[in-house]
Image 1 (cartoon, rainbow, N blue to C red):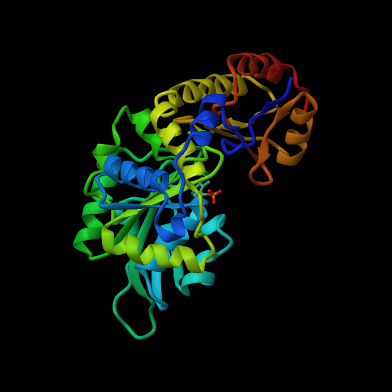
Image 2: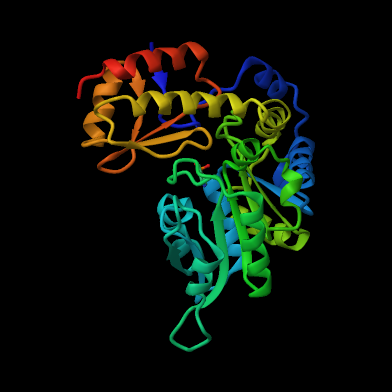
Length: 337
Ligand SMILES: *Cc1c(COP(=O)(O)O)cnc(C)c1O
């Protein structure tokens, strides 16, 4: 058996999702004429209480468009040392926007108001302008760690007081909401922009939505075009995303439960030094040699991602079945390392 736990981006569209794609009404979205894309953008905006949305090919693009639209060169953004924006977007903040980054060292990637306030710079010629704060929920590299609603609210309130833009990298915001047993409406009024990935645990083949006010989205459309992200009959992808939002949100709880079961098993394995607390669908654990561990596990059919020299990541998702979880739980204790 092959159990692919490398990422929740590996999911393939199910037959009902493919049916929704085949039957989607299409048009040219660069001409603003794809009704399915518009439907997705309006649906996502309404869920999160934002004025408008913009459908993009990836979550990297939605984050990078947000930075570009909110800042100008000589500005600085505050994010966490382990954030996706800082680590995994090819340094796009420098490349696209000419901004600098200042980093908090949050607990598993979660920044506090106190940590943010220490990084705000005074207005001297020799400092960049502190302009924007980006939080990530859940935090990928933090092992899917979750900011509670009150924690997001206090960061958002602080940013408003300091006149700082507050952006949410919500690549896995639905995992956070399901773990918290909350609805997207709990976030209404908190953020200037939100990026939501539909191609992670929600199971669409591609697509992220950027949310904000009308003026921000108008500006973002132009930036999307210059980045090469203007797509034509992209309703075929948007239809998959609409299907995912309608059908694949509540089931994320299954992934979370599977991740917890796998983590409990890892805790019993002699070759595992420690396991990060599991809050959602990501399990990060510490071993002596991450690459060697991943190779040995792959020989048993369990595919994982080495995440640092000593950390390994496993992610549960839509295509990880109960039988695969049972196989993993039975196999891990038998591994010799
Ligand atoms: C996956 C991810 C993104 C976007 O990645 P893409 O692969 O470009 O869609 C952004 N932020 C976080 C936290 C992610 O995990």
